[in-house]
Length: 109
Image (cartoon, rainbow, N blue to C red):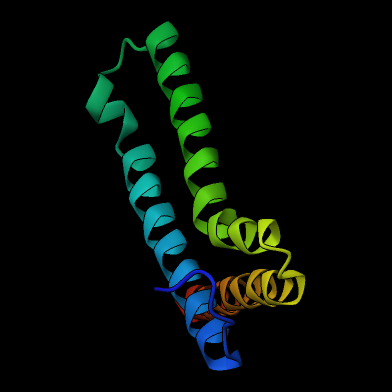
C-alpha cells in the first residue's frame, strides 16, 4: 500500500472494516484466554494470577490501540487529517455495528 497516495472513501471504509474486524478477533481470543484463565494457571494463582491479568491487560490495550489508531496516526503525521478522522470514525462505526449485532444475537438466546 502506498502511504503517500490519497485514500478513496471506499478504501477508508474497507480499512475501517478490516481494522475493526481484526480488533474484534483479538478481543475474542483474549476473552477465551480470560474465560479459561483459572484452568490455565490452576487454582492457586493469587499473586501470579493478578500479575498475569495486569500484563494481559497492558498488552491488550497496546495491541488494540495499535489496531485502531496505528494507520490513522500515520495519516495524521502526514497532515492528512480528513482521512485520519474518517478512518477512525469508520473503525469505531463498524465496531459499534458489531456490538449491536452481538447484543441482538445474545438477546435472542
